Image (cartoon, rainbow over all chains, first blue to last red; front, side, top):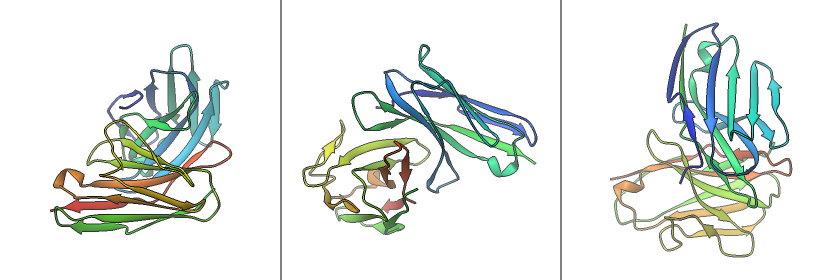
Length: 111
Length: 113
């Protein structure tokens, strides 16, 4: 079964706007990773944040993690049409090695 | 990061047949995993492929339906046995590096008629 939920399920914005996606999970984790998937293609790893970290940046990406609320957010600033994709969070459960995926958010960036 | 390849990239199969998917990594890795992504859905973990021992399957997946081999630290196969149209999915292998980052292969798109 999936570890968590993501919201929104779908998000449509204009180019240049910021996009925020949220991920919630149910159990203790070692780390949380965000991935991007373009239609029907493989997953691209975006960023990993560990359970003892609260925020990480990578280019236009900003990820936060709140372990007390069991939630994370991915912010994409100054979005581009090329950012159109599905975004997934994935959590590595404490005490194991397996990574469980959320349901994903479909982002549409209109030019 | 590890470079992962999968064969075949896609296939169309008849129901009742079996397909073996290969996953090759360009470096030795301890942890390898197999996932399934049904149309329009997220990824579901099928099993962890252990080198030198049987794979560890997740709830809802059994060895008779999805036998897995892991003969060495750079290679694994997943067989989808006695296929039905419900098995139509993208099958992805992944590896976890020492940094804990998990990387994915390009996937195998399977259609069962």
